[in-house]
Amino acid sequence: MYKFSIIDKVSLILMVLGALNWGLIGLFNFNIIGIIFGEPVNLIGRILYILIGVAGLNMIILFFKTKNSCK
Image (cartoon, rainbow, N blue to C red; front, side, top):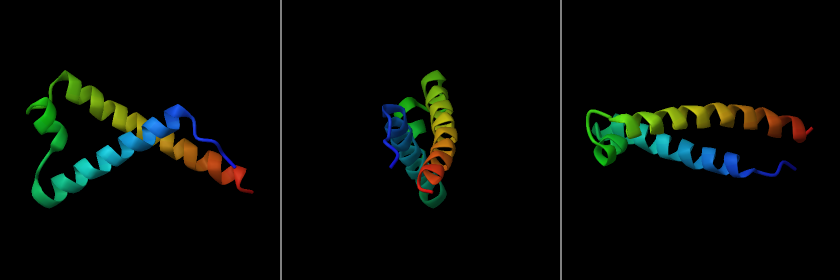
């Protein structure tokens, strides 16, 4: 069984944050990250969006790691 590292756990949290943000944008045109960090998105907001994207890439890699460890 694959043990989640701290990076995997942080990536999962960022992925949930990104998914909730996109869901709210789609349903209500409400951008949580834009509200918290200011509109238009400033440097901190852009960094957060980049981290969410990197977390998504890490989750893809994690998917293949866990898929191979289950065999």
